Image (cartoon, rainbow, N blue to C red; front, side, top):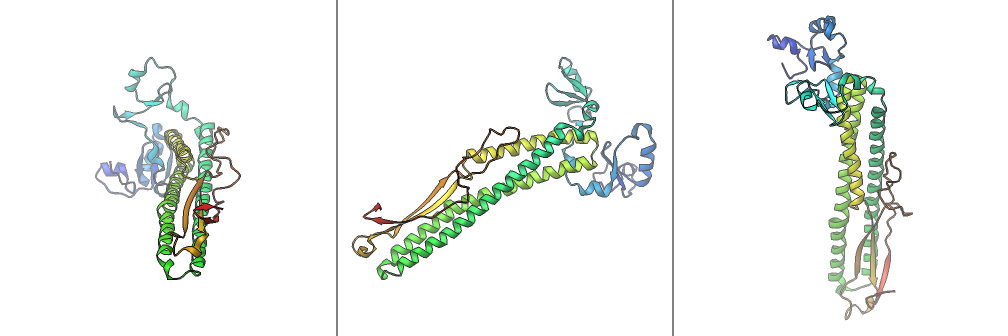
Length: 322
């Protein structure tokens, strides 16, 4: 059988190359117009789900979630063991004779697109995307604010520098370098890396959401059943990713402070640096709990959001903060 869905699989087996017009979701095979006409009049195949080949090609990898064939015995899976949560062909059944809850897949696939689990999974994917969007927005705001605070700090440093003579050139340069290193190495890189991860995870979940929409529109009940199991697992992984972000403190709030030494006038004898750059973090307020468990709050519940980052400009007197 050809693996090219643009060609009729049946004709290809007869060494005839003909463009396909439709896709059989049950046979997992492309059909030309003539083979389609034969397909729909065969009694055993009359209830198979056919979709235009253009629609099949447009849905990408949504149907790749479907695994209705037993890889161990090269046979079609017809049963499902609820005790072990696994698909069974007739040969597999021999190892599950004592299991409770072995049912025909056809029984489980009935009305699956309107089932509570299908609808719940669709809603769960939408909820995850919403959470990722909020987190992405918060991280982007945090990054913008940190950059603004960096520029504000640099301006204050320059204002102080204008009151000093050439002796301050060296320590001014050292302090600016320290500031930029902290911003680039600790702040910018950390937030930007998390932001990229969040964007990537959001894209993945949007992909799963598209797959479940495609299954809803074009998939057979059997394919939807197989695909739903995969998507549920992917959704669980995405939820776990959100939990991990909170545990790892990936969206803790960062605060940049700058303390200036008050004894600038005595710098020729005493001052060895213009000040101290500090990067502080505190938990941000992003609620990521699932609607399934509203008590599972992932982050702190402080009054400030992750974007509420402020710079404090403090003056040192003899090494002590006044």
